[in-house]
Length: 346
Image (tube, rainbow, N blue to C red):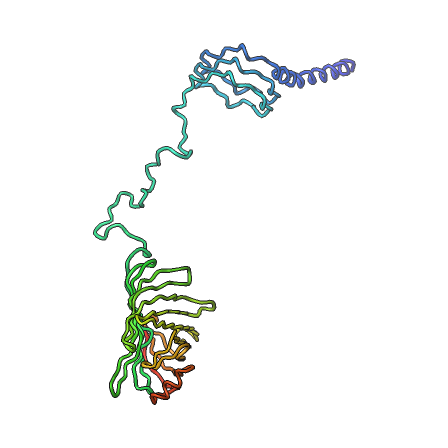
């Protein structure tokens, strides 16, 4: 019984000393001076796996350490460096003998591309063949024809037409446009206004036009400029001004809306207004607004919406002093008619 009582305090003291000894060693290393340590020798076979560097090494001075030797085979796998090393001074460490040739830096930016990288033009060295290098659709010259109206007015006994052809890209085009009417009785006159213009986008919804025009009704050439685009609520709008050689200025304003009933049936109301800058009694033209034309068409789109036959009702009236000029020439001041025709594009 006495041996048991004496042995218990002895064992407890021994265990306490063994537990405190690593802490004392770690605290002692924080003030060690490595300035005179020579590590220039061969340390390739040194095993640091059991080294504990978890203590405070912030005041350690490595300025005099010579690490120019061969340390390629040093094993640091078991080193615990989780302690505070923020104040360690490595300014004097000589690492000129270290070999970085075997370091893998392939994940860093710069340098040579990997062997499987794409080529800058995405061809990967494969030729484009007989068709050549592809280009963006917007920069490829194209052409198009749009016939917005080709119909017959039963009351007026005439054929109305309006078409637009163009060639160019999404940023620059040359356009040929014509609109007018062809009488199918008596003298069978053709009244048309044809223009050749340069077309260019001005913004997302608006395009500009400028060119030359010829009016068969007045038998005079003109310089043309206009703006065409989509107004709010998807109203197709156009405004064109024509300056004739005699100083007369004509202004055409138009608006059109497509009211889609389903995938094929569409109701299209349209209005056009014409104004002139001065009187021209020879052609029944008065200063100001002269004519108002309206039409409502019911169309049925087919063949991928490229072909649309229609039926509708049109109404035309003279405005202001133009009404008196028409009465003097025994011409109708107001007229309405049932129309039927087709519109298409390709």
